[in-house]
Amino acid sequence: MRNKNTSRGSLVQRLTLAPYSVWAAFFIIVPLIFVAYYAFTDSEFNFTFENITRFFTATSSVTENGIDREVHTYLVIFGRSLKLAVISTVICLLMGYPMAYIISRASARAQKIMITLIMIPMWMNFLIRTYAWMTILQDTGILNGILEAVGIRPVHIIGTEAAVVIGMVYDYFPYMILPIYSVMAKMDIRLIEAARDLGCNSVGVLRRVIWPLSLPGVISGINMVLIPSISTFYISQKLGNGMFYLIGDAIEGQYIANNLHFAAAIAFILMVILLVCMALLQRFASRKTAV
Image 1 (spheres, helix red, strand yellow):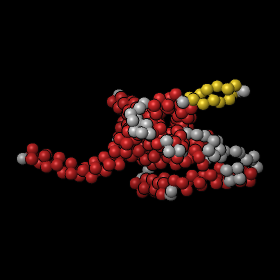
Image 2 (tube, rainbow, N blue to C red):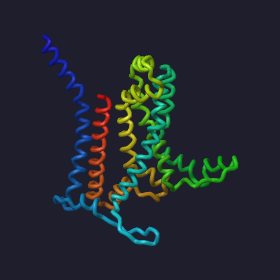
Image 3 (cartoon, helix red, strand yellow):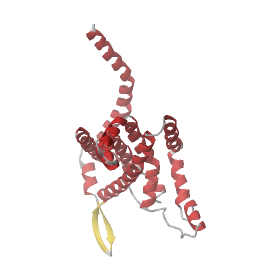
């Protein structure tokens, strides 16, 4: 009887998961297969590694301090994208972690209100939010108007890396808070109380109890912020005034130029790098949680 019930349960689970499995296969796996196919073929759809090698070997001439030198074009672009994405992710983590903890320790009613306030900006279109920051950060914008009103010299932010980072942090900040909050909200408060009873101070409780238990949420938040940040292109175009060419811009540029195979190669390489980083982060989190 138990075996029959178990088999029925597994059958029900399979049938329940079937729609998602079909959706995932059609909208995730199939597009990835096409990306890989285009990445390893030329314009006549013959197999080639040229698109991949071009990403690592393409060079351009730059002038620094009056000296001309050759740099690896797409590696430099990827490095710049990674730098801004990491900065944005770190800022989101430093601000989002304490906020997630505060929300998780609040009353049920307060939690709902605070989560709603965090989610409200996400109800607006991504493009509208980015245009709003253009209005705020431009030289004659709201921010400089406030600074002038209080007697402070205006600052030039729009068209700088700082503006791009601000846009990334604003747009992806909720994705850092929500996974950390979901883990902290399920945390057994008795573990924290036991640690305090055993002599741990606030720093010790954070380091020995709260941080290890919340690490899965932290890793999820890092992935959810880092991945879209490193591949964004609209934020860099609008808030960076096109001054900072990121890897997302490179993919879009190749697509507009109808170089679909090289655009797919860049996307494929980026995907592989991000998957490796995610796997390493997940392994790190598993080890820390086990300890």
